[in-house]
Image 1 (cartoon, rainbow, N blue to C red):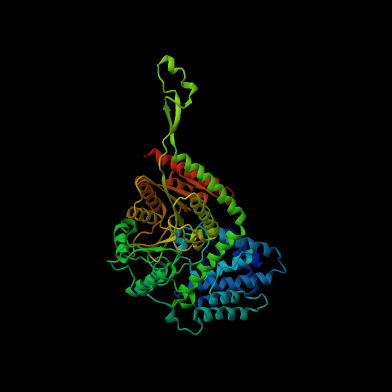
Image 2 (tube, helix red, strand yellow):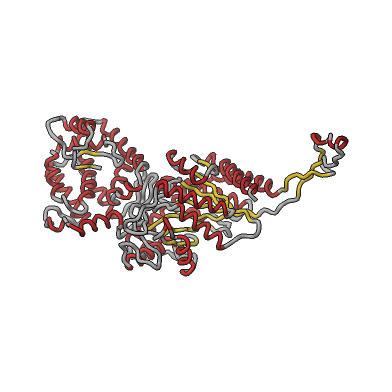
Length: 585
């Protein structure tokens, strides 16, 4: 985050800039900070080196040409990526340590993203974020993100070589704005760049809180999800806040294209929305899909570029999930065998009746004295009558963007549990949830009737996570299809215990975040358990969210950090949930 203000800059940031520039007789017109407010040491070095090799006054003069433009902040951030590469290459021969500092800065980028609040995430520009992610993935040796053709070309264009002279650097910056943003700060009239009054306010509000286009964007960290998912859609019988009917139709088309046709009728969907989308969820909509959406358009047939790009990313991730399972097939196979065996023993123990006192059977030596002393013949034990056990398990996977860095492992864990339960002849369904464009998308990856678990590899992370509404929807769907008498239902939620969403019922409503979101999710879990659906969590997330985890799920959770410990932890969790469940009956 480069700022053209220095009044609030720390002395440390200024000293770094002056030291890198090799002089202390100027006041820098830029300082750099991470989004969390901490000084960005590396970029402050870059600012100093830019003064050394180019002169900040020339850079400032060019940046002032688009001052007041609606996208000025985006332009600043994008162009500084080009300047970073230029300053790095120019200084590296004299300062080899820059290579290590640059790599460290790349690692910091991915760490800082995990600490951002929902509001900070929402204020990030997606073009800027894509380029930052690509730059630092390249620097740290990570796999490059999947970029559109235009974004890939921009990534290459932003590698300003260190051999340029100052005029050539200015020319490169101008070409970036012209070629990729269709804007020339030199030739465009200034009156086109600035808006005043209500129109200026509305444009800023709409661009940051009510964007016209949002997609399943590649994001890193805890992420709180997709910052473009800020459309405040109302229920079917009301008009969305600041949304047109055309935009509503495009949103629906987008959701249908990604997740396939609805698995319920339109009347059933509206009825569910009327029942569930109230209170904190007022303004949300539901989309319940069955399977991977066999009727999805192929990427080449999509009439919207962002839809085609997203479908390609989803298909690419599916292949990555499949490759992850294939490359670790021995370890995963061992997990399945171990979990299947331990689950079989566990389920068998719950289906057996408890031992009963009897006149015949196995002598209980500790009770033998009762025969003569109390004339009590019930000093023997025999097995109780077997009880028929109908168990049904549902896996609910948080598919928000914060899960992006763990997609393959989450898909593998869901596959291991599902495959093991199928081996034990236990009906198991696998469902992913995310909030996108105002829709709570409930995507069934495997139905309870299927024995084939391959659909789980279609798991893809993107969007926000409105945990409370997802849990309430699962409860609602369970009530629509009650099981046989005496059925025991277990819901396992794979989560990071950090519910966040920016969907609002009106333009000035509150976002779904913080304590209120945690309490909403906890209330949903409480109601599920009151209905007899035992609910437990498999936790992947930051230590800072452990308190949220306990508040939502109580003690019924496990924390998994590797596949090696996974099967044993799941058995322990199911034993806990089953034991407490039968005690309540």
